[in-house]
Structure formats: C-alpha cells, structure tokens
Image 1 (cartoon, rainbow, N blue to C red):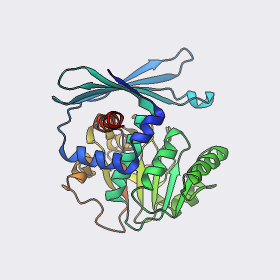
Image 2 (cartoon, rainbow, N blue to C red):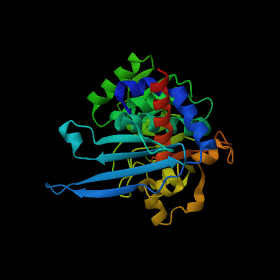
Image 3 (cartoon, rainbow, N blue to C red):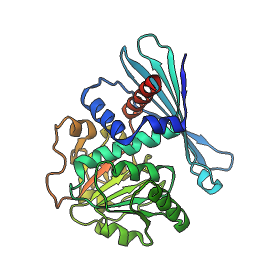
Image 4 (cartoon, helix red, strand yellow):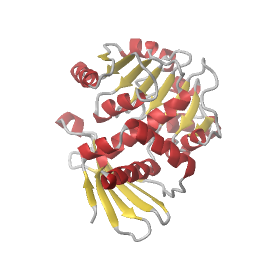
Length: 315
C-alpha cells in the first residue's frame, strides 16, 4: 500500500538537520540519474504564460521519483501560491508506487535545505546577519534552514509589501528566530552577511555595489532565462557556485551575463556535489564575495522523498 504524505507530515519528517545531512550524504554517495528537467510553456486565455516543470530521477534498483510543478506568476495578484507541485515515489526494484507526497512542502523543504547546505560551505563562519528577500511561501523555510547552519543574531525580511514582511518576521519570531522586517532593501543588503532571494523577479533587485566584502548571495527565485534577481556586478565580482551547472546556467542570473560575455562557464568554481565531496573547499577568503545560484535538482527531491518515506514507515 502506498502512503499519502501531506504537508504537516512532511514538515515533521524533514527536520532541518536531518534533511541537510541527507542531501550532503546523497551528493557524496548516491548514483542518482536525472534527465534534464522539462519546462513547458502554457499560454493562458488572458495572454499571460504559465509553466509546467517535470523533474524525474532514479537510483537504479532502489527508488524512482517524479515531480510535476506548475508556475502561475499571475497567482500572486489573486492571493494564491505561484508554485504548486506533486511528487510520486516508486520502488526502484519492482516499480510499485510507495508514496504520493505534497510537492509544495517537499520543494520548499529541499530548496531551503540545499541553500543552507551551500551556505555552510560558502558563508563566513562568523556570519551573524541574514537577509531574506521575498515574502512568498519559501521565505519561512529558507530563513529557518539557514539558521540551522549558522548562529544568526539578526534575520531581516524584506518584501515589496511591508505588511507581508512584517507577517513573515512575526511567524519566524514565533519559531524563536531573531527576525524583523526591513524597510529599505539597499540598507539591509549593505548590512547583511548572507542574503537569500526568493522572488519571482524578472529584473535585478540586488545590486553588486550593495554587497560588502565577505558577503554570500544565495539566489533561489529566478529559475527561467527571462527572470533575474541580481545585476551583472553582483555576478562578475563574485566567486560563483551552483547546485548543477546545466540547470543553473539556464536561469537568468547566469544565463544573461553568460550570453552577454560578462562571464564564461569557467567562472563557475564548483557545483554542490563538488562542494560536498570536497573537490572544492568552498570559501577560502573571508573578504571574497560568493554567489550560489540554485535552480533546483531532481536529486534533492528524491533524497527528501526517501527520507520522508522512511520516517513514515518507522513512525
């Protein structure tokens, strides 16, 4: 019998230390095979465009998983989530379905955990001020995950809606985190040691001259070529790292400066697997600016789904 693992059960199963550790282990050891994700455009009756993403992965003989994601940017104006997803997990030896999981919660947890895992290699050990840019469904998870790998004394939240930023900060304080809403994005960026962006921006909102030496910029939100959260200076002045070269290089934060000749593929120092396997040491200079571009990987989903399944079976 297959299990249905909903939002609350997933959050209980995927605690930050366990999930971050699971991703670290999978990047080091599991022979995950993952075809390139498909991003299909869906024209809407009102002239706008939505996206359908399909992300399969498997470990031969062990497990098979596939996530299907919808991205409807117009949902923000309707008060609905812009991203919705479902995940199916199958036995890799028999092909039998083992679990159907809430893809939204799974995506949020694994995305935040991967971001925090990268920051554990790239953020300064003495980082104390975290800034979250964006107030959508990822903001709470990303803030909490980052606080699992560094001891932040200040967590600032900035969003275009002051009211939403205040609400996110209040929710984080209820979790015991030192959160506050930021009024001015430039001021907050100049003060922050680590900046994590979780927006659907199509134009740069983070400018390189705002980022102090030693800062770490974690770019999550813009996953398509026509989306962007950072400007050229933020990219060209930094040591660049990615979750996966192929996927991250298609996202606007890297694709646009690559197309313009501002950077080359050789500017990417390492991916997350190479960091976990210690093929690259990560941060080597306390004054260097680092950037991690996350576009999402099917490995992360499969690793998280397996952990949730194991928790459901044992619990």
